[in-house]
Image (cartoon, rainbow, N blue to C red; front, top):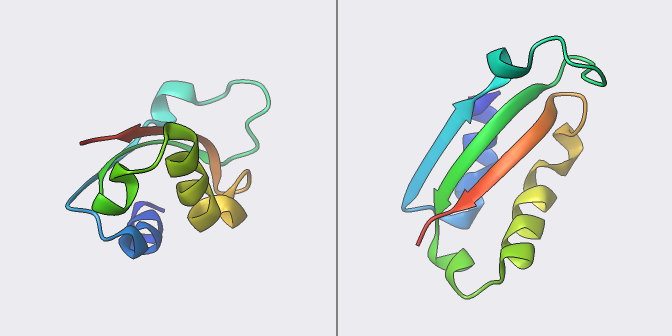
Length: 80
């Protein structure tokens, strides 16, 4: 899944991208039907002039079809 996330986020031309699989920390909690938990740390000039909400929307637009089946939870940290 991390490879797929990285491939999709490449459209933002990141200068820094870290994808952390946090799934083991959340295994078995209610409401999780098997999708993973991920933290994304990304630095991209495309996101620099965007608000936090706009940045998150761009990322969710790229990953949205993976939620909630393959990605159950996503934490996004925009680096500048």
